[in-house]
Image (cartoon, rainbow, N blue to C red; front, side):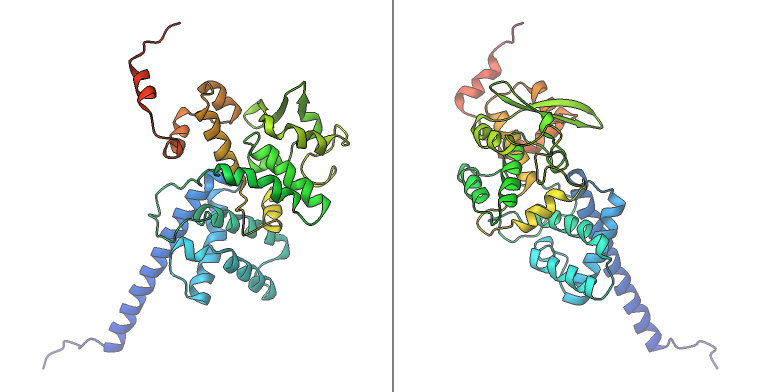
Length: 310
């Protein structure tokens, strides 16, 4: 008689199910990690914090909503709002954490669902940069700002437009600019301080008039964005963008900055000056903007044969 024991079919099924579950978890972890690394250069949170927030959201989206691992489906703003409401209602998300979760998830929405971009899948490791605004979209911003329902929201919109499109500042920089950081001697410059030092950024002429009106009655210690006196937190701009969201204009501080940097490249600002004004530490970072620059002309190609003089 043979002592060989026949394998238990139920055990085989259990092992197969376990392997499939492990594969699903592995795919999800890889996906979350890829999204977190994509957002990290554009966010104020660490990769580990981004991974935690995104991981909880993706788990909910897959298990409760049955959504596949496709960014454009997962990071729909309506799905994000549903997640926040569900988690708060079920006491799985503290109200003190709502702003952080909403900020991260809406930033993902901005990155993966730029306006008028067709639905498509993306390689997880591929870097993503939001496209610049078109000339028509830039022209629409004053209309968007004037159309806000309250005076305070109009003021916030004007400040975001002038400091984002006019100076290329990051969201965290916009929220902390005070009136005493603004210098007006016929041309407006904004002094920005961060961990890397201090820099002065000239504002584009087209925004001077409306910006002067915005800050005219403010004291030197008053904030430029929002109420003159308020608390400072990292989600200030993201929360306003959510409140002022409109289907006609996809408002994004990242796209504003991209538009400003590309504009300076197109008009031929000296690279060292641009790197300093934009607070970019490496020339290589400008390579991300090359796909959005106009194609070279015969005249610009001929510059390759011109010898530099000192």
